[in-house]
Amino acid sequence: MSEWARQNVPLLTALSSVVALALVFGAVGGVIPSALLPRASDAVFAAIPHFNAAVSATAIGTILLGWRAISRGNVRRHRAFMLTSFGLFTAFLGAYLYRLIHVGTAEFPGPETLYTYLYLPFLGIHILLAILCVPFVFYALLLAATRPFEELYHTRHSQVGFVAAVLWLISFSMGIGVYVMLYHAF
Image (cartoon, rainbow, N blue to C red; front, side, top):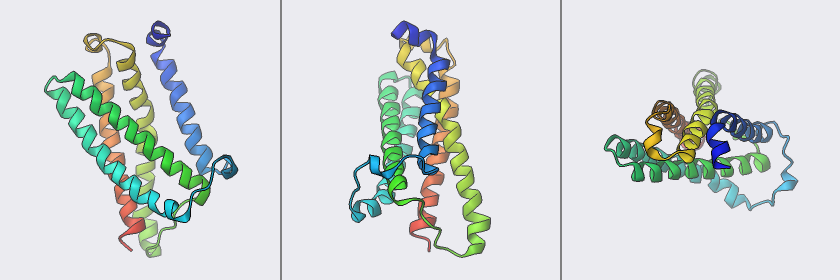
């Protein structure tokens, strides 16, 4: 599989991205029935947004630490931090989709004017960046997973990884902003 995967990173990136985004859009669109998943208590559902905010803040830290590690030439630490970031992203997404499937979206509690002119544009940009980062993240991870690190310098891993990290950082940061607007500002 590794030689096949090595030769087909763009295809694997596309397939992984389509599957991940199909899960997200399926959950958002109500296509995934809640009966497929066991239902947690209301306390668990209430805790998920706070958990996800903490996961997002931690992911911001691990992405920045991974960036710092590679800038210092420490490939092993970079790999560990970026894999941790991906694991945190996966945990965030799993918890978010689980709550979304069972509870639905959170209603904006603030004034209608702020909803229209602040929250919706902010949320839209956050969602767009979150969607855009998916193929970049998968491509960078798949390149790294299919090659020894010495060969990564002859690929687009660093350029794609840079774009992925920037999009990830902005998206996670904006996600925390959405959380603050939904659960603390009003």
